[in-house]
Amino acid sequence: MPPKKATSTSAAAAAAGTTSTFTPKKPSTKPSKNPVAMAYTRYIEDTPQRTKLLDAFLGFLVVVGVLQFVYCVIAGNYPFNAFLSGFSATVGQFVLTVSLRMQTNLANKGAFGEVSPERAFADFVFGSLILHFFCVHFIN
Image 1 (cartoon, rainbow, N blue to C red):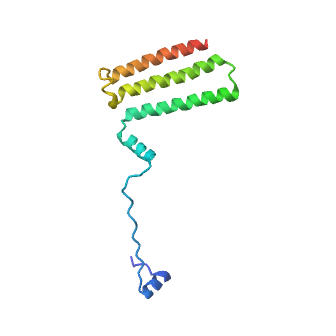
Image 2 (cartoon, helix red, strand yellow; image 1 turned 90 degrees about the vertical axis):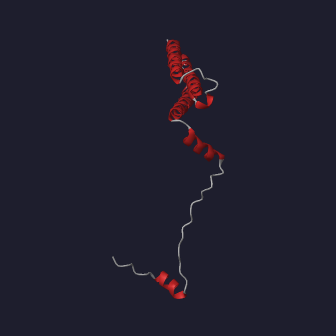
Image 3 (cartoon, helix red, strand yellow; image 1 turned 30 degrees about the vertical axis):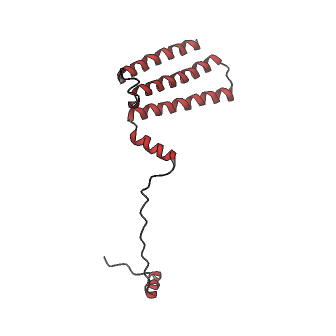
């Protein structure tokens, strides 16, 4: 393939004796000074996948709790026992999930050394069943 013809601007630059060479800058390898970005990067790199899954579920529970509260404020709380049951189920499930996250986190191995991750999950499931049993029976 023959080389492309020079454009008028490059020909004018060549006639003037100056060459326009473009050298792209290398991206900076310095870490960001933003503490939020540093914390997020460290979280993504260092956190196990199971803990990230628990964190996603905790975020979902927060969103559900906020939506329930906003609905109660805007639309009213006519079946108040249903609102209380749903909201308490959300808060209770959040507490149980935080407990599971604490027990399965590798950094807390000293505090929960005798509790295996399987035992922690079994406690989580058992607590969730009891919580939802009471919430369903609170509605009537």
